[in-house]
Image (cartoon, rainbow, N blue to C red):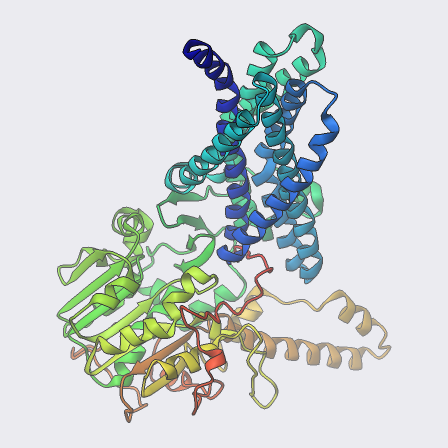
Length: 639
């Protein structure tokens, strides 16, 4: 009896092994789709929840379909399901990325809503069909187990091994796959596992000579998958270029998806926390050329590496052509406003080293404790040729002590106080990052500020303002985060809250020179309307009037393009001197490229009003997040 039992147990082993392997593959496909979406549309919690929910619902539909396959050979049906999963699984990430490319182009043409519809018209069917195929798969495995041993326990064992496979797949995805390969390659690898299962079924569980169609299908799919795996790096680069360079693609669907061999290669580095992309800009934005009017950086340092952009998880972090506007306001404005140079400085984030570079310009700063969670980014900032030349090797300075740890937990347990705390963290576009902008986090910040000290953080989403009206007034756009920040900071107990913007004057004489040099043409509709004016003199007057309006608008937009929001904080109510002062203590003054007295005074804002009373409904808290404020369904773009 014992030997007979062992023989039956061994006969079940192949089916149980299949249940384990296929469950692991299925959950990895599910997580691949969720992770791809969270990279392209942020809001990780929402997308993982939606994808998992849709996938499980589709599995239920697949289970209903499996009943209709009862008369067919279970092994044959399983083989064809594995072939279908091989095809769709390998294409899951490329299909989602292709849909995102279409969205990017449509939103570039001011048709974002159509782009959203196109995007989700691809995403949801892909996830649903994957779920249906997986839903058919599990009942087949349980049916095969019962065919080997006609008892309920056999089916239960198959179900148990399926759950174990799901557990292993769910652990492998974040701990091994995400940190080792890109998502496209991961899809190809898992698809290869499904294909190997199909080949095993064909060789050992079916009479191959009776199923020639499936044999040809196996060979064709295997050939395509091998080619795809050999070219996985090139395929990944192809989609990276469409994410970052979509605005440079040729018109039409053929032009949009045709390979471009003239574009620079995206340099991608992967860490346990994020993907880090270094992107070379092939054609700077029209407005980026205005920076030369305001900044003397390239005049004084012609070898500075321009048009190099750093992206973290697909979101822009640093643009070397424009970075001095951001970093000079971030580093120097609060010191000037506070009226004294801090001695002990804490920097949270800022792993690229640019903010630290600016702070090191003050001889009076004795120490900078730099906290960042990602050692890979820190190593890049120290060794990458572009980043090291741009940040001046700041992270290797003797005054800088870099500690690799989570900023939230560091502040939570810190005992030391600092004269200045700089918070340079990613934009809170998902719930994971929202905790770094929570009431609890800012309370930790407030407790760590020394007497007469300050804190400052970049609040890029407070830059979401309407175009200036004729009287100069502006309104906050719905995606502006100031209503949340204002009440959150007030609730955290700060007595002084001063929002400010990196603001450049629009009456600079060099702006018109740039506009004239770049050239500006009226729209086809405007030119057509001009032709309706019969009098040449009146036609010329109207042409000049239209050009003047457009030029005035361009000057306003040139300033808005470089507009970045920040918030200065002090624990107690404090009277601040809002006049510009040179805080360097050096005879030649501080070596700044953009920030000066005029621009300092322009940077105070009356668009953002600090609330008198706290509205609890708007406070961002870990237990009740009110960030992000951007629609969860809106995909991101590279620019």
